[in-house]
Image (cartoon, rainbow, N blue to C red; front, side):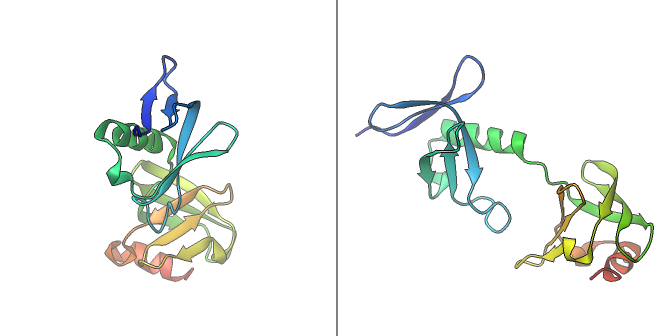
Length: 154
């Protein structure tokens, strides 16, 4: 029995070779629980969405495959981290929030108070009107002004 291998093809897409020798082109890693267990289980899916390989623990992958999976996930993930709330247009929704993120200053529109979700580990997930998720990893660590603005919506 051989170990499944993961390599890049000449076009930069991931190619998965399974134990039985079948090759699947253009596979994509997808986290099973991207918010609650970002380093946990994942699937390798084909372009059609079919699962070709379930990886219960990515740490068990060979170093080269693990690096390729992480590289691909990093390129596809977009979840800015809010580091400060600079201003809000109104304390009613919809509300324009000017925030400082790990990727720079941004204005997002909070459509409803329900668009701020508490995660089980204490983080907050803020989803804007366009469906883009922003993360507040440590709400208590925000500066005083940011915490006061945020509290008005919680």
